[in-house]
Image (cartoon, rainbow, N blue to C red; front, side, top):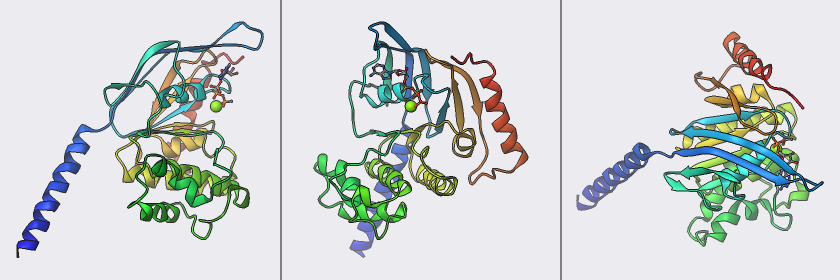
Length: 275
Ligand SMILES: Nc1ncnc2c1ncn2[C@@H]1O[C@H](COP(=O)(O)OP(=O)(O)OP(=O)(O)O)[C@@H](O)[C@H]1O
Ligand SMILES: [Mg+2]
């Protein structure tokens, strides 16, 4: 009896804590982000010019734009890996001043650690934070979620490109970040593998209250995954268009309204002066 009451109280506390987290939610704000680099000829290269972004709910926000316009540069700044020349950045109300596991970045190439197995790659962040012990089961859980069973002990050179992408995603997702930055994570994959992993990304999104920011050059992928798509201009990049995609998941790529959204995104490209 006593035990049962305790279990109820624990369940109520857990529900309350979950509700508090849900109502607090995550938020991301970037104001006037500008970035310049020194080019190879020593001249200043203006890469981002006044980028503004505000996300206050667990959306998947897509960023599309011409090659070299500054998309990866912007994600690196959001991850806290690079400091912008100008601008203000906040995650959950705190200034972004450096990398933090709560803001995870999946790089344009999977960038796995060659000397670690699939499982060890996935566990890397937990180990680095000293929280692996007691969480070993979560590595197995993510191996399963990402369809990597049977390859836990393989090294990166022994797995396919699709498996490498899934390992990179699992390595980030397992940390349960509040902000997940995805830099063309599927660009190197064939259409079949890409479609499978796109569904896995949607599933992961529905499981968390995290904000996802996805850079992609694939308009269909953006419409399939994102709640909102931002179109970036040619360099120096800034946002020139926004398309809201308010369709339920799973989305039908052949539905007339899906095709219309693709056209809407492409319409914004007409306003971009390509270099
Ligand atoms: N560390 C750096 N030093 C100098 N220039 C840089 C640096 N990082 C990026 N750039 C330059 O900034 C510009 C934008 O690069 P970025 O990688 O952000 O583009 P992108 O939009 O991600 O392109 P892609 O779609 O091809 O991945 C490029 O001209 C690149 O040469
Ligand atoms: Mg890039």
